[in-house]
Each structure stands twice: as structure tokens, then as C-alpha cells.
Figure 1 (cartoon, rainbow, N blue to C red):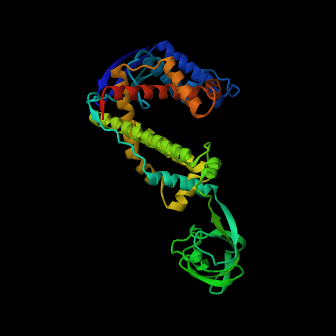
Figure 2 (figure 1 turned 180 degrees about the vertical axis):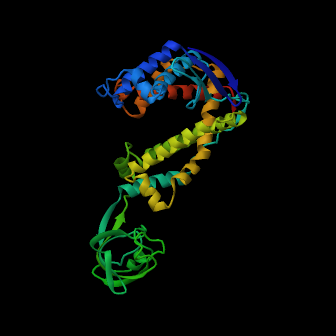
Length: 428
């Protein structure tokens, strides 16, 4: 096989390929052996007719298509094995320019990974947000812990209020006719949770244990049961039980119950410390995003449509997978939302374009800066994962397959890139 290479505009390349006569003839013979059982020739059992007889009856080109399927991928891969500096990002557009039973010439035009022209990626100035923890934030965090540590106590000395949990029986009707799903017994409802249609929970407020009353409501115009949407309804409600949330006192005993500390003061200090750590992590992540966004904005690259299409498809597939994880398939999503596959793809075109450009630019920065991953860098990632999952490094490695090992290398590379960008830019 011999070929010539022509570099085209917009990071495309065109190969003109002359396949060796022997290789083409071998492909034709392989195609004959594979396809001969499909042809019936008088005087021969099906599948046993010589190639020459089949070609005489069905034409000399009868095995060309199958032979092309054999020889084109093989020769194209041979070219890419030699052209190690070229990185195709799409399937080649192939045109047959000459074909006989002894000769084959074709052209293959393909999109390459685009050229990235880096702008400024060092010597820039960035600002990291200052981190401050307020007393209110500490109090809110502790109050959430109090809520989680609270308990429910039954009361009988007052009517139901917002925030109470009530046990009720109810029967709903529209125009005097009970409707499906409108009846329940011993139903537990936290008043103010918004679990029922508007007006229902407000109607229960003020009722005492053992009391029954009619609660008048109106179903929302947009309601999942179309036969009830926008309808006026009456619920006959009976309150059978009222419980109120009790919270522990803010003292040392509370601190012992919800933390590893013996005093409330020590617990508060730890809460403040953890809030600060979270804010610092958030500020660091925001800084890193800003650095990357700036480096990408400063660079120029024409992102090929095929790469945008592939990334868009990947994002749609990830969205479908998340839906499946939540118990819904994407067809149901389209049905319930009125969305279409075309519109969904459109929403991902812009983020897909941004993602591809970011990836291309950062790859070029890594190359320009000479950043390489060492085994020590990968070990550091394993150690970090082990620490976060409370496992040993050996346990983490045991869980990893080859695909995950590639993830480890990418993580190490990204960490090294980020460290390089921070070290070579000014962060205030």
C-alpha cells in the first residue's frame, strides 16, 4: 500500500491511497469465501460454486462491497499507525476513485483534532474570596442538629398548629362524589410541609383531637389528575392525634449526644471550624474555575462540529442515565414534560461546546508546560481517595478496574495542571 497526504483547511487531512494488487486480490478472495453461500449457480451445490462462475453470472463487481469492508479499515489503520502526529476526531469520508478486480484507489478525508492557539495562561492575577464564618451560620448549623435530635410528643391541651404532626382520617369529594385517591385513614401529616394541595393544611390548623370538619379546597389548574384539575373539593377531616416537635436544650449533654465533644463550647468551635473548611474548599473551587475559564477565554480554537455532536450525545446519555437512576426512563420524561429529543439536545449544545473547548485548551497547556504524571502523582491520588473513604490504599486499588485506573491518571494530571497554574499566576 502507498499513499499521499494533503493537509486541508480547518484542520482536515486527505489521504489518497493505492492498495497493493496482492492485498486487494486477497480481500476479494476473502470476500468470496465469506459470501459464496449466498449465491446459487446451476450445476453446483449452493455455496460451492467457484468464484469465476459467480462473477460471470452476477458481475465482476459482485464481491467488491464486502472486499472494501475488509480492506478499507485495515489500510486506513495502517496509515494512522504511521501518522502518529495526526489525531482524527471523526470517521473518515471515503471515496472510491478507481476500482477493478486488480486495482483499488480511494481517498479518505477526515477531521483532525483542531489546532489550539494559546493566549496568556501564566503571569495573570486572580483573587481568592475571603472566608468568614458568622455567629448566625454557626447557630443555624447547630439548630439543624437540634432538629435532627428532636422527638415528637403527643399533646391534647391545645388545637393543631403549623409545625405539628397530626394523624388524620379524611374523605374527599367533588360535587358530592368521592374521587379515587381521596380517602385515607391514620394519615400522618406535618402541617406546613406543603405535602397537600394549597388550603388543606391551613384548614386543619385549629382543630382539636377528636374533632371533625369540612375543609374546602380548590385543586390547582395544573394537576397530575386531569379530572380534578381546577375543581372545588370538600374533605371531611377528623383529627385523631397531635404531636409536637420537642428539641433538646442547648447544653453540654446535647453536645455529647450529637458530637464527640463533652462541652457545648467545644462543639460550637468544631462546627465553626467545619463551616470554615467548607467555605475555604468552596472558595478554592471557585478560584480554580476562574483560572480555567480565563485561560480558555484567552485561547482560540475552532471546535469541529463532530466533536460538539459527540459531546452533546454524551451529555444527553448521562442525563438519561440519571433519570434511570431516579426510576424514570427518558421516554417518560419526554411524555410528562412535553420536551422532545431535538429540544433536549439543543439545551446541551452550548455546554458541550464549552466542555470540548476547555478540554482542548487544557490539553495544549499541559503539552506546552511539559506536565507529565509520575507514579508518585498517581499514588497521591490513591491516598487521597483512601483517606476520604476511610479505606487503605490497597483496598482502593483492589476496587479499581482498568477504566478507573485511567481516571486516576487523569485526576493526577488535573491536580498537577492546577498546581502549575496557581504557581505561575498571582493569587491574592
